Image (cartoon, rainbow, N blue to C red; front, top):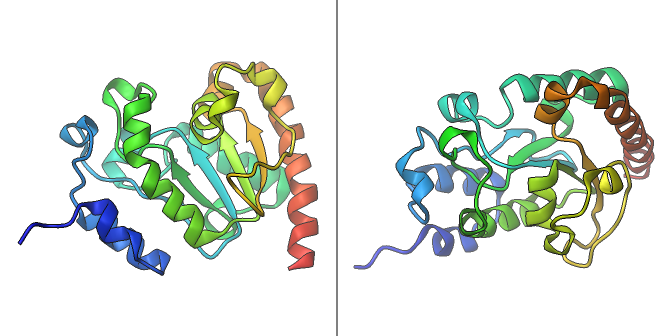
Length: 208
C-alpha cells in the first residue's frame, strides 16, 4: 500500500497535540532541509494560547533541542516580552517557524523550502486560531504576507493590521530578536512595539 504524504496524513487532524505528534513522527522529506536536520522543530509554548509568534527557521540550538526559539534570540524575546508586557511566551503564546527544519549555516529558508512547510504552518494557525499573529522579522513577513516582500522593515514594524488570508487575526511585525542582538540601537523601538502589543493583548484578553 502506498504511504500517504505527511501533508495528506495531517490534513484531517483535528487537535493540535495530534498534529504535533504526527508531524514529529512523519520523517518529512519534502525538501532538502531534511538531509541536514537533527530534529523537526514544530513549536515552543502553549497551543491553547491565542497569540502565535512566527519566526523564520530553527537555528543550531533549536535543531538540537527540537524546540523553537531557545537560542540567544529566543531568550531575548522571552525577556523583553515578560519585562515589558508581563507576557510569558511559554504560557501565553505559541512560537512557530516558517520552516520546520534548520537550513545549513542558519541561512534564511528559500521560497521553495518555505512553500514545502507552508501546509504545516497553515494547519497550525487553523488549529490554534490566534487572536494576535506576531511576525518576527523580514523573512516571516515576506512568507506570510508575500505582497510585502521587499518592504522596508522600518515601515512595517510596530503597526497592527489585518489581512484577508488570516481572518480574525490582528497582525503585527516585530524586529527579529537576532537583529536586535546585532544592532542594540533598535532595542528601544522593539520595546515600544511590545508595549503596543500589550495594549491590544490586554484588551482582547478582557474581551475573551
